[in-house]
Picture: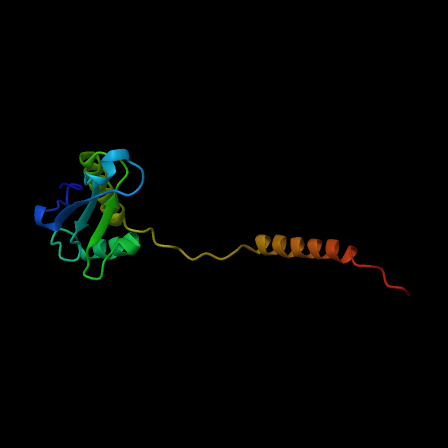
Length: 138
């Protein structure tokens, strides 16, 4: 499976299992295994750089297993073939997202004018609230 120019996944890295989908489906739902569970052995993959693996682990979240695999379950349609396509497309999108390096954050300081505006707004708000106070009986 080709992800981009540098990353191509081998057949042994992907495992597909088919199960019965949940939800409505008429008479078909109890007979046909249309749901697809796609398992990608990400941790053992020689085609992914370590930086991509760490970002993929963070992006995958709960879909990342203890043994370092990404598991995607798709039961969107009643067609097994269409569910396979959707699962593979989602995996490709997830890996492509992991290949993007995050933009480094550059620490900045607030300007003096913005600090003054913030403090003026706080003082204005405080005066409005102070005006709501019940008058004292003096």
